[in-house]
Structures are given as structure tokens and as C-alpha cells.
Image 1 (cartoon, rainbow, N blue to C red):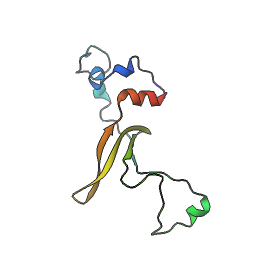
Image 2: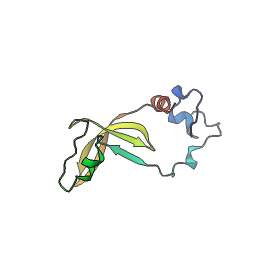
Image 3: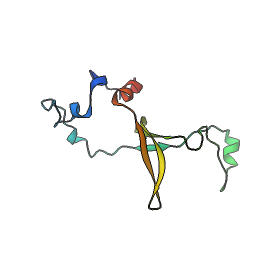
Image 4: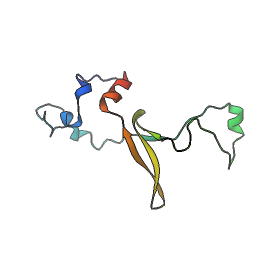
Length: 111
């Protein structure tokens, strides 16, 4: 689905939210706030032949194109929305967002 938003480069969340400055608009985001989305955290990627893939077993190490300590990418429904770093909180992994992609940049990447 490819949706165009007029003046998307200047739009902010407040402009689109029913309680924001343009509350007279028919758009009401409260209707979609509970819609689940797929959140993907990408540490890195690599390509390998099927022969090498079939030789993997427990303890195998796969080298990624991204170096240790580099930020990971955060995708929502396949769209890059932020970069972050892995953190450990109470013996659980988490992600601290270090850079959020601007709404204008996200719209530009959709085209």
C-alpha cells in the first residue's frame, strides 16, 4: 500500500493526532492505536551459499557485515524507524534508541 500525504515533510504527530493543533481534521489516530505491528531489530546481515548454510550447527559463528558495537536497525512493518544499541536490564535484553528517523525521511524512503 503506497499512501501519499500532502505536505508530509512538514507533518508532525500533533498535526495528525485528533487532539493536536488541527483537531478539526477527520483523521483520528485513536482508532488505530491498538493495531499490532511487526517490530524487527536487525543486528546485521550476511549472504552465504546453501552449502555453507547446511553445514551450520550448534556453536557455529556467522560473520555479519556490521562490526561489533555498531548500532542496530529498528524496523516497523519493514520500514526503518530508528537505530539503537543493545542493553541488558534485569537479565533481559532490550534496545536503547539512539537515533529516530524523522517522519519526513520515513515518507521519503517509502517512495
